[in-house]
Image (cartoon, rainbow, N blue to C red; front, side):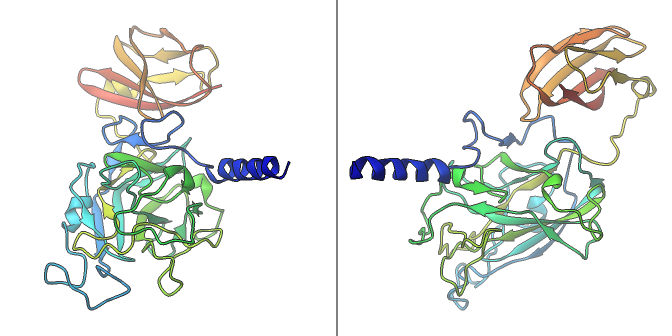
Amino acid sequence: MIKTVLLFLCSSFVLQAQSYAPAAGEPGSTAISADSPVFVAWATGIELQRGHVDISNPTFEHEDSNYATYGTAEDALGSATNSVVSLGDAGEATLTFETPITDGDGFDFAVFENSFSATFLELAFVEVSSDGVNYFRFPSHSETQTETQIDGFGTIDPTYINNLAGKYKGLFGTPFDLSDLEEDALLDKNNITHIKIIDVVGSIDPAYARYDSFGNAINDPFTTPFYSGGFDLDGIGVINQQVLGVDDENLDTIAIYPNPASNKFYIKTVEEVNVSIYNMLGKLVISEKVNANNTIEIASLKSGVYLVRIASHGKISQHRLIKE
């Protein structure tokens, strides 16, 4: 009887601990590929403040410096390509965008790191600002144990991690939804101009530890006393932004309705167009060529938010569709 109770308790603990989405490519993962069409823009500016290669031994040097030196700031701009800038322990990078990010349907942007595997994860906090002065941190959670330090080449189960950049392997972004942030008079969630990425250090020693929103020390590989230590920033992809530019006059007349839609929707257009519909993880679910005011059947799709790309003469119009 005692063994049965203990087994039940242990099983319950494991189920409770693994609360979040799994690794890229697994069912239920929220990872978004860098080449996904859901990305409409990428970061265009950056300010970089590198951290030590080993915060617990700040005079230690690697490659003739006690600070991380791998990569250049510009490596974090534009689309994610696995060309990165290393932040070092507690290092920071603040990125800016040509067009402000908005709180749209579903995820609004994604942060890319360059991990070579699904479980060697170097994590970072994510903060946003609408004025470049006042920053607001996404609520985060690390369910990784805090009794034993993960060493510099150790691993993390991504199902233990939520709202920390670096949850997914290279070329797969960790997405963030601005609606996760509490309302504040100093934050305009429809005018996000700055995103700050802050390395979590990873030490469970209280002298250096950084903590999630539940007060847990965030345990990730430490120490990583190399010039490429800390969070390796590859890019930030934008999903929702204020204005979606359309160059062609014919595309200006395109509309989709009704929206939200249940079983079908219509496309208002003056000419034949190619229509591609993607889910928010970038998977193509429908592809059709339609004429003026044609119907697109969507009864087979699951409820959620989809990206509708309408192409004509080399120009593309993008729309968000809510499937009820």
